Amino acid sequence: MKGALSFLTPRSTIALLVCCVALLIAPFIVDRYTLSIILLALLGTYLGQAWNILMGYCGLLSLGHALYLGLGAYASAILFVNYGVGPWLSVFVAMALAVGAAALLGWLGFRFRIEGVYFSLLTIAFAEIVRIGFDNWPFVGGAAGFFLPVNASLSHQWWNLRGGPLFFYYLALLMAAVSLVIAAVLRSSKLGYAFLAIREDPQAARALGVDINRTRFLALFISAAMTAVGGVYLAFWTNNLFPAQILETSKSIEIILAPIIGGLGTLMGPFVGAFLLVPLGSALTDGLRAIGLSAPGVKALVYGLILMAIIAATPNGIWPWLARKLGLEAREP
Amino acid sequence: MSFSLYVEVLIQGVLSGLVYGLMALGLSVIFGVVRVVNFAHGEFAVLAMYCAFVLFGLGGVDPIIASIPLAIAFFILGYAMQRGMVQPFVTRPQHEQFILLVGVALVITNGLLLVFGPESKHVDLPYSFDSYTVAGVLIDKVRVYGAAAALAVTAALFAFFRFTATGTAIRASADNLTGAAVVGLDVKRLYAISFGLGLACVGAAGSIMMALTDMTPMLAPSLTLLAFTIVIVGGLGSMTGALAGGLLIGVAEAVASLVVSPAIKSMVSFGLLVLVLALRPQGLFGKAES
Image (cartoon, rainbow over the protein chains, first blue to last red):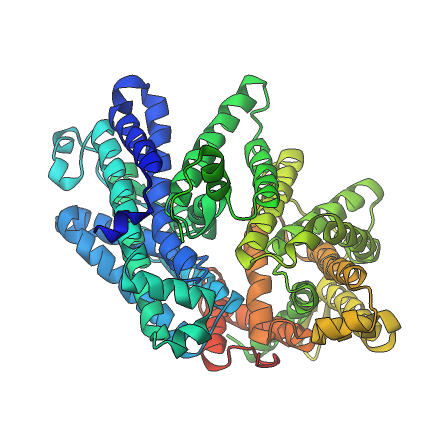
């Protein structure tokens, strides 16, 4: 654990604590709408961290993380509605399912040395096969979706992940915090260094005795399992699931934008990226409506332009640049 | 189900496959030379479809004929895009290229959504419902014309790469970038031409597709995925592979929608993709990377 904290300088420790306190007391300061934006950003942070472990640390570009999100969400929702199994139990089923899917993907991908862009396209193909399957599978509701009961009598069973906005806010905060800790611990562990070694140079890593396939599998499993937990949260928070939303490639893209824009392979990148992009999205919606430009498409169009501008201007993401500006250059290897 | 129905579906698959193949060829040319994966490929196809739609609406231009001017227009667009936007990203990591092109895709899709709305559009050609009857088998006239046009554009592209000095130079820089630079080829210009040619393919293919199907801006991501599937099956960077992949996917989807259900058809092509990746990762016609 001590090694995991080695990235913190005194200055960045203070910054991190200020962020934590601000997020803890936010519900008592900001209104419901702002709080929901922060919640989305926290969820984006969590999912971004999960994806970042695979791509940022181990160098495997997955463009199909919606698969694990969707599997986790559907598994827990179906177990809850059809079999009365609560989320605290089904979350393990969700993780197991995601790891199973990841194992299949990894088996195909790593065994046959599918690398680079081919691996990325394989991840899309996997996610798309499952999405189309779910779209046409009556048991999971098909394209019409799967719904969790929104029932007042259930609304305080926190142990079944039924609760108010505050409950879900703090849960998201907890998940984001835990994901940061997991990433930090991984980073300073032997496994984490093996990830980085493979990312930088697989051949050299192999020469040093790193089992490439095994290490890649582990990165994939950790990432998939964490994403599936995010899916469970999403299912119980939104109460409705559609393959066209949660399993769609656009969902996968949404997941990966925050860590890339924030700073790939950095601990704070997913956090910074999510807290930039999510408010940006809602500010665009509000701003455009205020000046009377609420036509469908305007928001995504401007969002696309901003993405292009950011990636052209800051090749390594916002965080490395921001950290330099703020004097928070942690000991990020 | 009669035998002739199967033959009909098979022929329909081949004819659509040729148009798919042309679209995928664009992706393959861009990746093969510039080494950038055009994640906005389907979006450009849909952009071409809307251009064809507008040309038809304004001047009654048959989309299949419009494929020629649109190919030229998209060549210029691609050339300018590579020069002005993509070139600095050529040496940058793949995920950054990805974000750039996701941005481009968002701008195209939502720009179209803004201008034309979400309703699906189609063009009524005088011969839309005509068909040939060959030995009791019905073949849609419009598909025959579309496939012929696609084949013509493809042949022109092959001839360009085979017989012109610029085409040879592009192939040389795809094979050996350092070598090409050493002998004094203007690689940036060749990249811009290649990106332009890639978009010319998708411009022509999109225009032809307008004659064959209905279209909405929402169609774009599935077209991108279709193009990916085709080039991976055929072999990313291989021109012959893109064509063969287009035919294979076209036939597979047509047969799947007849035998199983239309909803399942893209699942079949993704299944095919996984199979090819498992057995022959470099694709049917791709060269193994050393």
